[in-house]
Length: 175
Image (cartoon, rainbow, N blue to C red; front, top):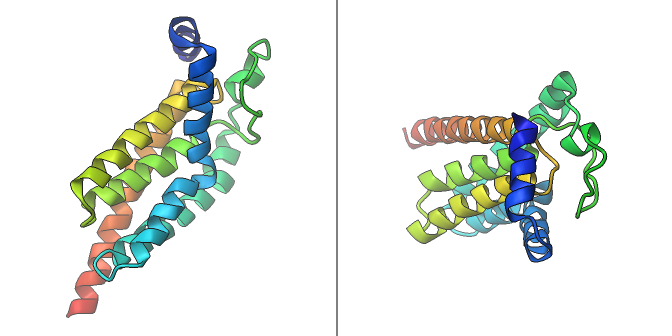
């Protein structure tokens, strides 16, 4: 079923202009860069500093757990490794496929930002970007749909856990 979805995306919408757009969108999520920048920007205001710390710490811890734990344990090859006949439009990523780190970081960050005091427009933008980054991983044939689904689920749960721990810490500090 994973390949059916990937081939369906390719057959239905793949084209050179969209290749370039999806490559750009996925690059925004490389190494969690867009989300690290968001976390750093949150540090500048006392009103959002706690949320920046929550975002950056949760991203860092989750990255370590996924890259050196889950991905190594599962050791799932990427779609382009399983089907080497598919020509990639981006440089082939290294490492294993499950979960999608781009998706995980994006959903984690959008979840944390959803609870933060940032403007509603920024929250919506974060969710739209998270979904676009996740979809780009499918479009670019570097993750299976189940990798993206796992990344979204783990990222959302990690974000919720980070928010919860951050709120407990804030409550204890204010007493």
